[in-house]
Length: 164
Image 1 (cartoon, one colour):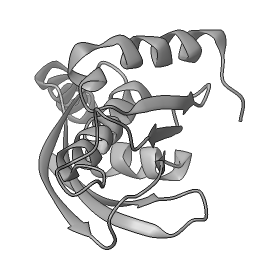
Image 2 (cartoon, helix red, strand yellow):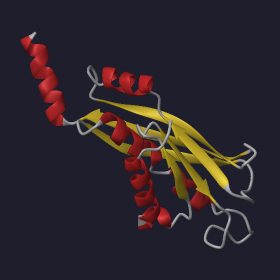
Image 3 (cartoon, rainbow, N blue to C red):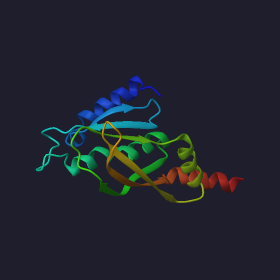
Image 4 (spheres, rainbow, N blue to C red):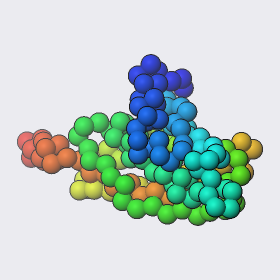
């Protein structure tokens, strides 16, 4: 899917936002429907650690907000989405530019909406591989995303169930 004018502007905003900019990473693609985001993290003076490889904090910081942001966009204003937990497993030192691609399918979004009709909240766990240009995995980040409907949306759902 191609990038729209709107998601291109969002991408520029991400890259200018001080907290994200500080990671040294750049968002290089956001799908028109927010179902996919790709980031790149170069090895340079800002991301290099004491031993000359990419700093682990930069790797984590580069991937941190993506799934939460995607779900906020894909689900809309009736939902609360938070990062609940994360872990990172380093496989190889990053000695060149690293990349990560995040994807959420329409089926996943519908599954979340369906489950939240009968549950207060749910956690979704996603793994993202941080790879080099050849596809070699340098780190795996596991993100736990907490999702629930806002109180107003839940009360409207309960009222509509009581009427039927």
